[in-house]
Image (cartoon, rainbow, N blue to C red):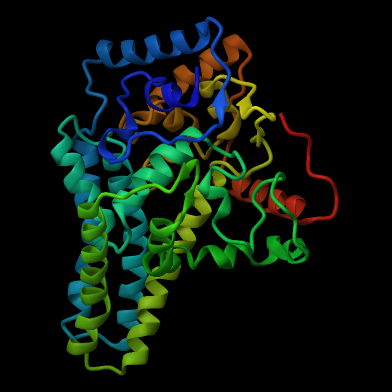
Length: 390
């Protein structure tokens, strides 16, 4: 299969990820090996489909997912309303800002991520509406669909194409990336740097990616004018309610408002940044490089199993909060299945992987995954040769 077909049609119950993005699929010259009879993936898709049929379940959100949506929105915006009442001490408002940061990350994980993949609802309008929760938080859902749904999910861990490996020149997240002298210290500062994830996203990243001449495999991509207008308009709306209104309403100095804003974003950024790195930049994942003809040696679906990792699968609170992103293998194979179902179908995916001798990367706990990420950062930053690639 080539990169175009695999990115949109390999997972069961999936439809083209690019359907909602003007401009269609990327024109990158990186392609994947054509599949030999892939009995393993065929069986995996059939068994997952049978699971939903047997249990008479929709692959989309259930009542529990809806309840979580309401709770995450409340955790984020109720504290905002309470802060604007001017009835709390400054240290209490700081704690409320911290709670908002935790809620923001939860919305990204548990609402926007599913919706923008078309996994929350079978109704595209519902997905579009809930996907706008990302825009409400100051990030662009339009750019996310391009850089995450299409680029990252197609070219996972491929240096020079996967934008998630290029989050900052201060970090070397791939053994195929150029090593600079300061990378030897990255294991010491990376986790603090992750705290700036959403601040960078809100004020720089979306604009930067919008104006890039080269974005992943895209060259001189033309963006839909209406989408660009929505991006700018929602950004201005976010700046207004997150900064301007508090400065007009709150009876505290402006610099204290900025401290609260920073605390909120640092909490959200640290949570988001760390969780996303644990899915791909750990010791068990691979970083395949294309040959001189731009060909990746494996089929797309097998490439995804090699480059992703699960963590803390038995931690129910973690799975609830991060929207199933700790089941990253299942997410990359079945991106249009709602994350609430990943714990159930993970057993099927793992059984098939064991049966056919396929890679199934998993860390038993969150702590184990963080430790592995730390060791990976240290290894990629050291002078020693990086581990051999698959």
